[in-house]
Length: 536
View 1 (spheres, one colour):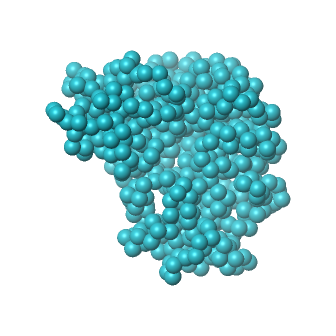
View 2 (tube, helix red, strand yellow):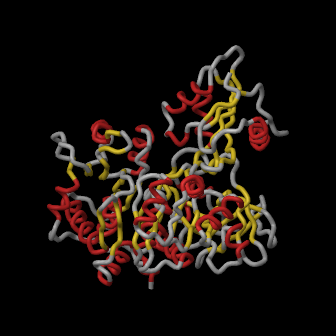
View 3 (cartoon, helix red, strand yellow):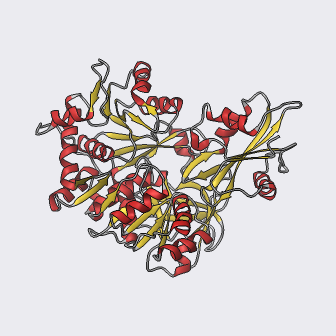
């Protein structure tokens, strides 16, 4: 029956059956399924009164706050499409994504992370004529502009008001989620109601999520995993989700203990930081029954330590934005080595192929490119048909670019990926984007950016720089140069200077050798901290 569900009907069904059951816990406030349904109904009515409706795109520039969840379901009731954006984006990145998505409305925090979004949008409203309305969450006095509305005013105005609800189809688009893709340029991944629900259902089936569970560790709802398994999966399972703004291990552990969390989602970086804090201060959450890691590769030793420290099984999920998040996951009943050291088996109706360079299927236990087809696979890259075609093979399978194999028991082993994508703290960083910024520096002749294994970050970003003859520049200056235009998580963690970059036989930068040399020369340093290497 869930194949006929839309995101609006998923919440409506849960709010009808369990209206008073706790859904979201944030700060000292609790929101039931009925609360979120009522507030999203009121917000939808007010947005409809502003002319927002079916097919319109609503950008969400919010931390992991209850208002994010309410906005998601309000958009679903209208048949609109959400554009969830990282609130830490730089102004140029935000401007591009708002313009590219054609967002008619944006719902934003007034202040967060030291950013004054009101000031930021004062300029953007002039530059983006399609952005007709701005909804602000906060308590600031607003300037006089008939396109700007405060959140609480819209909720109050919409209570009890009827509006025309467009009944969405499961195959209608619901979210445009931006990712770096394979070229380093932002791409809007268009995901459907069916796809997001499919990935969420497959994940919570593996976790065996029930109404007795409390979930902790979801800190970014703008990611496909946070939106799908995190938010929608909680509704499907009837569980309770503890919202957390940002990856802070002390806060996560405290929230897990305070709310008696039973299920812990998280990126490997979060788990690694938690293990360090527990080793120093103790305090393992006592009620956990299961942990699930997603968003980046999990090293074998880290997996073992997570299970040993928390005393629970660890599941590993293989998640891509282009597949609405989870496409494969291990299960509690899997043999221990398969559960922890593979990414499990594909979720229902998801087909996985492993192919050679020619696109032909390889025998079992052969290493090749992972390709996937199923309900969770994206409709395509928004407004980029050529990029969509390039990402899909003749049989309709998504070319993930990841390298892996399927063993005889059907478990998927993830062995690598395109060399120029670095997963730092669960977030994709494309090496080419950072390299382009480095090459714009007048003292830099050549550069290569590689990922280096890091206990906390998963991968640290290392900028390897060849200076022009006579050029003088320090590692700190390189990072400052990058920070001027790149988001903080894209700024190199390490800067090393080389006389020449190693090349392959075809004259391309030999990234594996670059990374090997950096590791060989890298001084000991606390994991997760930025430093300079050979900063002369």
